[in-house]
Image (cartoon, rainbow, N blue to C red; front, side, top):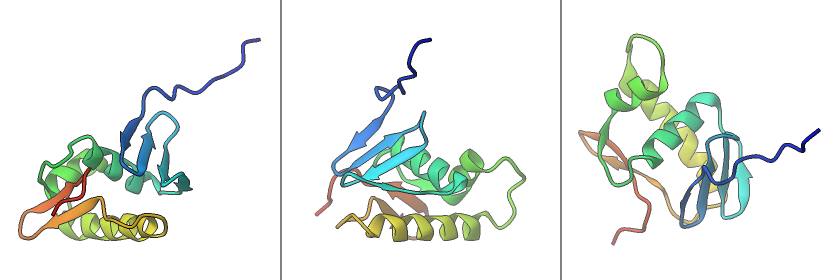
Length: 111
């Protein structure tokens, strides 16, 4: 019987952050953080669109399989939870709020 080896080539990497979609794992500065199903899907969706401003509706439709109801509030709550978990290990925020529009994933520090 062949030994199972996870496919680590299918990963998305940024400074201090690695996302392994096939394993549904995220490492921040080498530390694994545990995200809920929706948190992981949202983080992956944002990371796959770096520096692109995405509306709450776009994010919601990519993450939830239901008719949008109060999508801005749901997205805001999940973003807040992701940020809190990232903050445990990261000095910087990867998700930036674009006031009045939505959010964007910032893969390199802006300044």
